[in-house]
Image 1 (tube, rainbow, N blue to C red):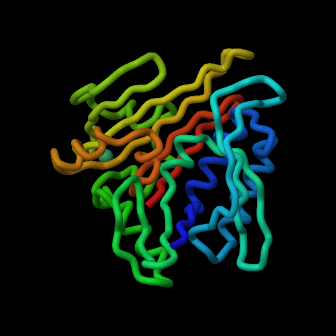
Image 2: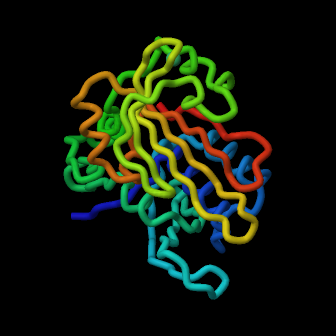
Length: 244
Ligand SMILES: [Zn+2]
């Protein structure tokens, strides 16, 4: 039996963005390079890219840091690949494909799969809630104000709040849609320009909220639909996008 970690393309882009912000050795070095990578990914036919090799690293430019994963990712079926340094939690939350059964495992849940219909099954495994089509920001994320959806929302309940990580339930003031909200920032010791990552997951029931509350950061990053509202270090404008 062989189990293969796969990188859904949207997660690969998130990993590349985090890697760039952190200055990992194997990462994009500029917004332009990241944009080029994003375009290349869009043009690829595959939805999930197989990881052919990975190992733990603990140094950036010889300085010991939180462990991260150096991964070699296949970009086509012909042997082309890229090497990328990836956040460890994000990597550990990636789907795992079982070549014998054709099943996917996502964050500990086994989803019965069918060979060659991998993309659909990953989508099924990840979809927790319905698309928030009633919210104006579903179709027009570019109209979200500069501080994110939180700016036009009411705080319903705060679940946890440490200095750099917060989870809460918020409600869009315009349409009443509930969102599970994660705020995460990293300390930028050099310039004090902390990168901020905000994630909004639409929820409709208490059960959905409970499921999300039990998830780790990386597990949340595999839930769709979700809205990313990120302000990377040195960014002129936030990076806003739906993953669905
Ligand atoms: Zn709304």
